[in-house]
Image (cartoon, rainbow, N blue to C red; front, side, top):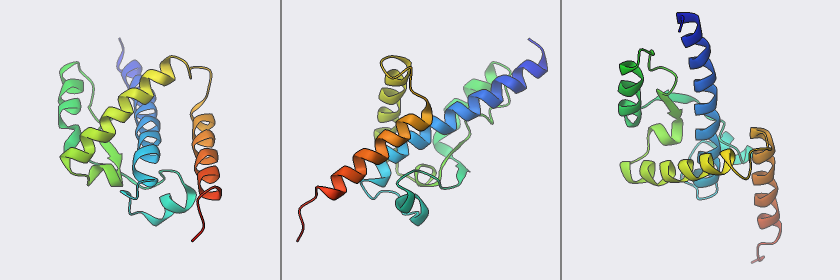
Length: 132
């Protein structure tokens, strides 16, 4: 492979990584109030800054071993970059399930289609919540 192939691969990998983590954080952190970023809660979608994280150290070293820069997967959404190890492991498990679904039964949907479905479900739950 040429070095330009690596850069194209890394760009695609970084985009996929960001989409997957934002989708997982949307499902697991925003609705459960683990994300404290106001803009994310208002839009009902993970939209906070992507920050470097120590949680990704093993992924970065694995990428460097095969000759990549390791920067494609170095960043996580702010709520995940600052999360405890338990919370990170929980959302990581959800991420793996989402990835399996996106490669299987949800393969025909785009990333934004899935986000739209999540937002519609959240709105219907909000509308149907008991009033006090």
